[in-house]
Length: 396
Image 1 (tube, helix red, strand yellow):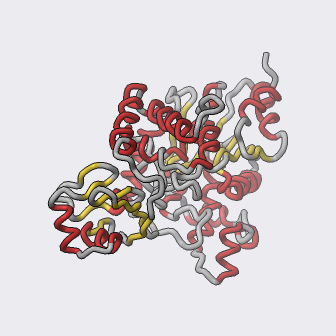
Image 2 (cartoon, rainbow, N blue to C red; image 1 turned 135 degrees about the vertical axis):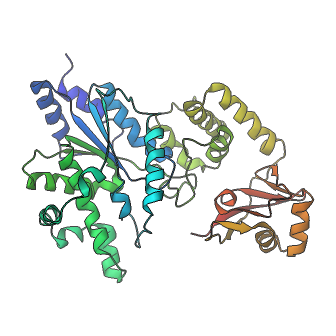
Image 3 (cartoon, rainbow, N blue to C red; image 1 turned 90 degrees about the vertical axis):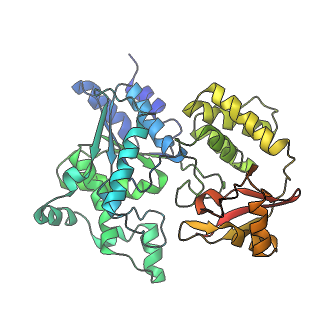
């Protein structure tokens, strides 16, 4: 029979940290002695409609625990989403409407099932509105567990406090609410990104205050977005949604800077190509593996052929200047941004669109598309004429 130490080492593979030292092995030993599964928790706030590749890093780790016989508890944070996780933020997050949260939560539930085993013996889906819609007496008991000084130890809160940026009382409640999730579902292990370390450790303190055994903490490295610099996020426009089309998935992966590829291969558990492969061949292999994972092998082959047809055969330049544009209302008037980017008049830009002289990522823009989504334009290569290219980036 495999030892708890060996299982702990296998389950900890690729993790950034497992805290405190030896905690996971101790949990495994106790569970084996008691003849029960570990309850392994992950919380996701439905702040956008799509799960992206960044989410799959922690979801895949959850699946590993399932495959080892344990029960995962996926918490859809329909109540914590009303606050907005302040982790890594330099300002207060905008608050989503209940309708937006409900729609996103339903989408998360369906998409997580593409990675997790939904056998009820190893899977539990919970919404934290079940317990966070609590009486005032229970809320007062929760806030007594933690001091303001503890909360201000968080790097993001400390930075904002020193800089005089506002911190709402609602945001200060967020780590407590996440910690109470661990109490409500009796978590043995909580998994999250490295940006969640403070919140998950605070969950241990809150469990202790409620007289419960403290959970082990496992943090996973953060997957950078296709910009190769910042955490993958829908807000930053650098994500690849797992529901994206095969062509979009392939094309957006091909925008990843070469220096970020190694971390993607590792964190997405994709075998790298043989040594000696050039950067472009490596990136193609990465893109095909991602498409195959969420579509199939034939879709990956078609996506590669489509990409070659649009970009390689059309001899896209190696160096393309980037231009920033504003799209705060969610859409942009294409002739206006083209005029600013390429130094032409708006009337000329409009004429080019109407005559089929503008391409977006290799596709001719339809003459009716004078107004397009800011998200669609962001990160895309726009071509006018035969030799004029610009990459558009949304000001955020």
